[in-house]
Length: 614
Ligand code: M6R
Image 1 (cartoon, protein in one colour):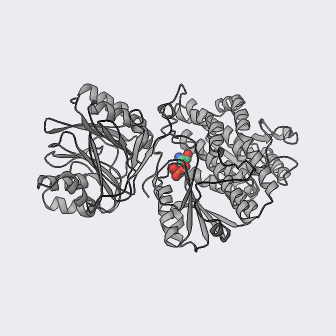
Image 2 (image 1 turned 30 degrees about the horizontal axis):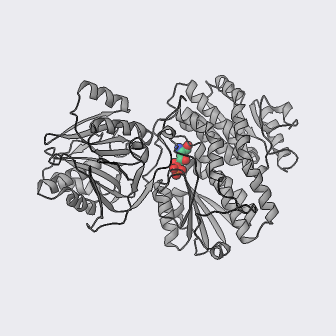
Image 3 (image 1 turned 135 degrees about the vertical axis):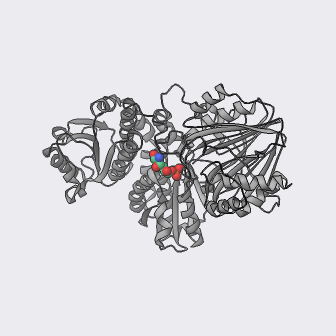
């Protein structure tokens, strides 16, 4: 949840660190801090609130220009978002400074032990226990990396730690368990960070740290060991996207930029998946076809928006493969003792590849001998690394906390997986698969068309700026679209919003309908879809009770016209693919409404982009 960075090299570390924090602020923005080593002392500044507060603090109280520094942007877990709880945390006596992402689950026991030994704590955080333990080891004469390994041996939970020692002007040591950490390898300089975005300006050469590893970094060396001090294997990779992908490029919000990137993101996700003969290929899927043929159940596991993408996928995968497909919220999955066997295929969806609940679900599934396929947007992240196979979505970095292109590309990747399984298992004829794939390949220009015609949705936001509640209805794949539309409004416009299956309305939710309440309704394609007429009836039912209906229906659907207070046209696509076009106006509506309300669209309150704690 937090963003962490460390730098050692010839540049001014404070500047590198603060610039890196700015690129990772989406990971948490409750406080920010920086520490540098200067003349055998640790100098640090930290402030509650966004990085602008830290900037002001650094302007008022500058810290020295040195070549070694660490920095942190926080999403608070233990201890409120105060200056004192901001990272870095120092050991008693100030010898060591440490930053942390994750949760140290046994911190209370450790803190009691340290306090009994006379250590006075300066914060309420779990992190400070690690800083104090590390300081004691180093004060007792341990080398910083040895001390880090000893401390890691005492910690339970999830943590990435980065520490510097006042006595070592160009060395930092980091450790990783269950939280992300990448090393940026430069020329005469090196970086560690939660995310490559923090150092992409300086180097594209990166190393993904594995589970339970410690990295010892100087300007000219990177040494990776396990927690026992043995040399550990590393996973080098090259970052393929450039800095502009991590910048707003003239847009007011990353979210808006990412909404507009969706045609490209979906096209890139589909790129290279088709053989010249029209058949589908998923090169990354290193699971033998015989095993894919023996699957008797699929469980899709994900959180938030990714979970809604999974709900869309269920309709497509079951229809195309005739394999039973369940969709489960990752945080619930392993606690209900799910029925998993060696012939269960677990599919996880995660934009970040670091979501702790999803990661724990993978571990649980693999313990039960299930095969796990990850659909993920982040190269080399923990979730794909711990899965049997991965299908990467090629959305490029998603920085807005509200997921947009992440959703569309996850849906597209799930379609690919469903069709591939159908191809391998023979549950569809080749020409049927080709027909769907051709239609899928033709969706990016249709998504662009939706984007080009969004002005009415933007105008609509002005009308609804004072609304207290908005409802969303859909059926079949339109239902998860409704859920996603509601989630977007909740998270960035702080507005009560609910998505319902339209057919469920009369079983309770219709009681919420009152005069003037806006209800968005996603209408299935006309004629080709049996549910179309039922949804048109649902529109009439809510309108008769005073709702203001905002109808999303395909071009040429005249039946909806009499019942739509506002009508937004969608390009013609088949029902299963409709989420790729129908979700876009809802994303933009939320973005526009939150902008009008004056909210920070990219950094909504209480949220962080990657939820790396359970
Ligand atoms: O990185 P992931 O796809 O695993 O993230 C899952 C959810 O935390 C994420 O989709 C969240 O719900 C977004 N804020 C929604 O916009």
